[in-house]
Length: 129
Image 1 (cartoon, rainbow, N blue to C red):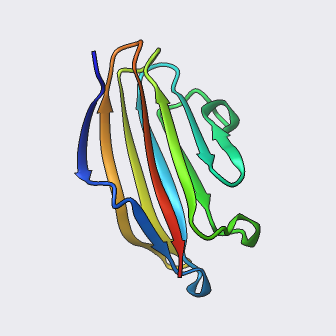
Image 2 (image 1 turned 90 degrees about the vertical axis):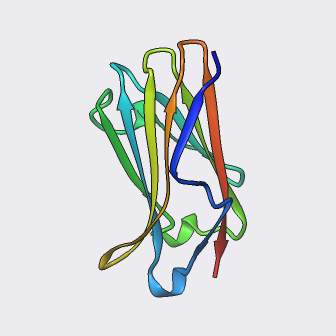
């Protein structure tokens, strides 16, 4: 069975982030199953997070920020989320553009459903403006 990908807000492929005004990206994974398995990687820095790296694993929701630390900032960085459906049948992946005041916009939101042997990847390029 192939993964069913259902976007509420589709992947824009390029996400502009205005670092000079304090913008950063906030990521949320909602996991439907007992033990979520995923990785979040950068083409510049390699694997940044795996589900087990986030305190409280396993849990139903995972959240983290990227680009709010100056050492994170890389022009044209490609960020990739890899999902494994071995123990979960579904995931929802949400990316928000934020600043110190809160959420500026929801960049993308995609639901995935798959069988135990399925994997899915979602990637986009960060454009620093």
